[in-house]
Amino acid sequence: MNAEVKEFEDMLTGGHSNSLGRTLEVVDAVLADRSRHRDLYQCYFSEDEVVRLRVSNAMKRVTIEHPDWAMDFMDGLQSDVAAIDQASTQWTLALLFDLTRDLLSDEQKSRAIEIMQRNLANHDDWIVLNNSMKVLAKWSVDQPELGAWLKPHLQRHSHDARKSVSGRAEKLLLELG
Image (cartoon, rainbow, N blue to C red; front, side, top):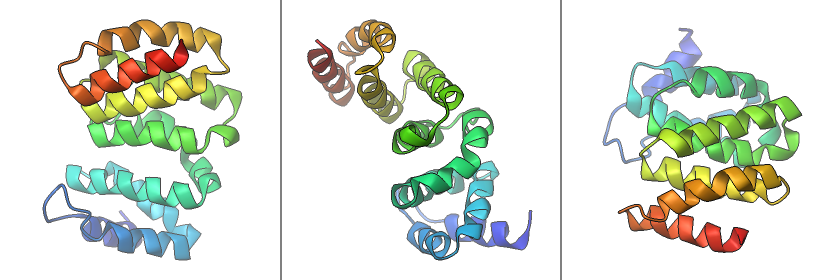
């Protein structure tokens, strides 16, 4: 691990896992120097799950400002990061895919859909489910086959005991008709 990655990892570690810690400082550093984006991305491979959680938050914030920057890492996001078994990485991927949708190649769009479908079909985290449902429903507007795949999953999730999941599923079912 190089010194720059270690610096970000140190900034992103510690404290309560629900706090941002020094995430906003890292975001500011990346926004000030695009070359630091690679250092941030490398923190996804930290052993510390709090670091990975905060990396996800930072990547989302950077991508909101500069969607094109995420394209430097899209293949890794869709392979290496998608393989990380942590809810925060998975729910952030759905957001990153949506933010970069117009920049994705057809192959990358297909892979993004596969990842979100897998998460919606197999994950149990409420944020992963909500973000995956929301983005898949949005994308299905111009992809009828995706809508056909999505509807039975929305119907299943409309009976989820968690109100945020069931409510989102019901709302999207109504929107999709």
